[in-house]
Length: 106
Image 1 (spheres, one colour):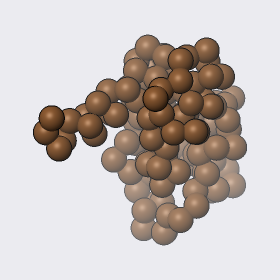
Image 2 (cartoon, one colour; image 1 turned 180 degrees about the vertical axis):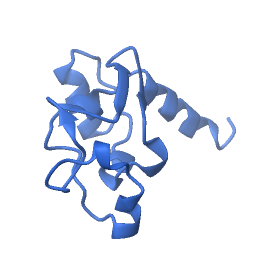
Image 3 (cartoon, one colour; image 1 turned 90 degrees about the vertical axis):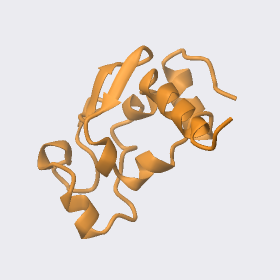
Image 4 (tube, one colour; image 1 turned 120 degrees about the horizontal axis):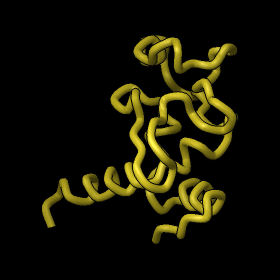
C-alpha cells in the first residue's frame, strides 16, 4: 500500500457517511481555532453565538447530501479542528454511526 492510500480510504468512508456531521447541534464547536482560521469559514455556516457551526436541527449546515449514502462538506478545506480530529472508526465516529443505524467501523 502507498502511504497516501489510508487517507484516501478514510476520506471515502466519510463521504459515504456524514453521521458525525449530523449528530448534535452542540458538537461542531470551535475550540482551538484562531481568528484567522475562523475568518475563512463563510459566515452563513457559523452559528449566531459565533461558537461553532450553524446547524439545521442536529445537522451541520455545511453538510450536503444524504447521511449514510453520499455526503460532502461544503467547507472541507477550512473546517474546524473538531471536524478534523474525528476519524473513521474512533469513538465519536462510531457513536454517531450508531445513532443512524450504521455499522461501527473497526
